[in-house]
Length: 381
Image (cartoon, rainbow, N blue to C red; front, side, top):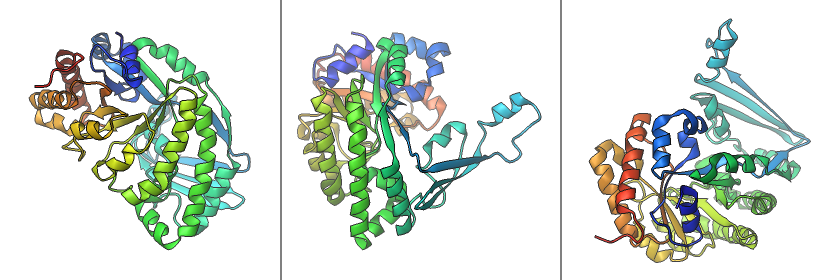
């Protein structure tokens, strides 16, 4: 089997020859596939690529709104066009404004480089986009004003580029409650949930309704799977919030996706033990980036017992790499043993290593260990 066949086999609950081990395409960077020799060697040895955040299946415009973002580079400048081009990747500040007939929303952030600017508005300095109830009206206007159209060209292009090295998902917005967390931050969300329940639920409902349009477009795309970047953790999404808001949404969009014979993957990389029983009630197909201890709080073997109808795409807990490659090998074997015989199970690297050097040394170790001990079916030791 090649890398793509292995991943798809597990996603469709079939048997792979070896447990797939994947890294995000964003981790390798597309250029690395072509010019970086160590990655090419790993790909030839079976490393799988999971292109989860590369393409969307829609385009959007808000005809009655305007967004202006200014990048402040300070003294990182020069007379030379070449120097100016290189300076674009230097650390800098960003300020911005989204203007609507209902008012404005402001943005402010410090980023490490140009590639980080795409994270706006996820980590702004000034308290997220929604700060007051007045901002609710701006966001609701933007949601209602948004016009979505299908666009599959980028998806088809990346499928062609990646070939048999892995799979290309189409990624969709975070589910409504996770979107609200990112728009207003945990503190404002908690306060507004208890102090302004009516306004909170109205905004949630507007987001919910609009997102259904996007998920329907994604379900009809040529992608094999739809990937939701939810970053779920029970530290913020409590059982009460999950049951009231997440569970109904996940199940409704899962039905939309399943009607098109597509796989629904949701990124849940946090502490999940407190909401594990509720996750079991969802019709999500794949819990991706499931991270066991020492980072997460839920064991692989316990998750497999509880989530019998789900595929677990487990993330290797990257801080283990700080303990050396022997510890990495032992952790990989522990994860494989916990997943034995290995049905409905994949391994991946989906979060950041402590450093680029740790990634360069650890990814080959993980792959070598999986290739040696991850042949399906896994013999439990």
